[in-house]
Amino acid sequence: MTTTQEPFVRRLRTALLGTDRIPLVFLGNFEVEQRWGGDEPGLPRVALTAGDAMVNRMDEFALLLAGPDDYVVLKDRPHPEHLAHLETLGTALPHLLITDRQDPHRTVTQDALDSPALLARLSALSGAAAIVPHGVSGDEEALAALTGVALAGSPAAVCKSVNGKIYSRRIATELGLRQSAGWICETVEDLDEAVEHARVLLAAGRPVVLKDSYGVSGKGLLLIRDAARLDQIHRTLRRRADRSGDQRLALLVEEWVAKTVDLNYQFTVFRDGGVHFDFVKEAVTANGVHKGHRMPAGLTEGQLAIVTHSAAVLGARLARDGYHGVVGVDAMLDPEGGVYPVVEINARHNMSTYQVGLQEHLVPAGWYALARQYPLRLARPLRFGEVRDGLGPWLLSAAGAAGMVVQNFSTVNALVREGTGAADGRLYGLLTAPTADELAAMDGEIAGRLAAVAEGTRQ
Image (cartoon, rainbow, N blue to C red; front, top):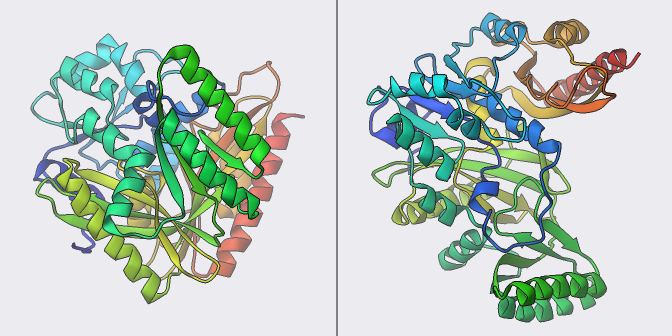
């Protein structure tokens, strides 16, 4: 396994294509797990929500992953003042390909499939570029087939297979990597047995968690603290199976173990089976939902050795199963400093992936960085200039300086409509400072200033 620091986007091209000279077409089809798990019988699901419109505008993150010779397909054109902000920092932006129309509840790929003019532009790139999605599903395979632009990754069937939490647990067990106690449930009969084990844990005061194999961002995750609640869910899943005649399941039942720190580490699997360890970061989460990352992770040598060993053996195993590309793994530290190196495997791009280009370009060696989202309650659409003016000196002014660069502005106004009342938005930023204390103080100052900007829209 290698750990050299070649620029990430060049290494990604080489990993996927065997050369760094072919441009990539990036697609930010976030929460692709919904496509992989659409026909999998996991926990009961909720129908489309307003939040889908927010998630689908996370497509703009791909702007900061691509190089200047690459292409990015977006649902809508980025705010021009946001692009200007990135350009003042010396960010070399890619070519933009905008869908003809966009439905807030569709992914960028689904919009692209319904965009004749965009399809024609993509078709002109056939043989001269390759498509790199956030994750490969049948939608991205359809786009490649329609345009003749090859997919630079593993087939959708392979990607689905290796992204299930059941797969994560199974190969971690095979490789001897530490995990919490747990049970795989691929049938209702498996669930019956797992529930009996879970009852023992609950009786001892140890909570359990039910995980949908293709859940994402806290969806499909149910924390259980008492036997009555466990029995209720058990009955619900049994009734569904009896009504449908389908006894299949795609669930895990696991002990909810004590932790002090969430981690996310990334490695890249090359077409030839080689594995490159990219990084490890501290993940900031709330109720199982990703909120950001702190860098560096601050691990001891022993903890880092466990993480890098896990990356090497997991990468080799994924390569044997036909996967190549980016892999992110969620991990944890227990209260004694021990490592749980595999909570789940995400064989796709991760939120941390989209920070790498900015880190390479803007964060000096030895400095601290924080990637996070700031919630905004807005009564009308917000202009980037209002954010710029509100942040004042805290908006990053140059590479190597302290401040925040805005990673994604499209999510700010994704749910906001003039005259329809207040709605939630999110601003994603990457903050950097020479010390951890300065970084924490900056974060607090920025949060307060952004809250004031949002309050101004409601007056």
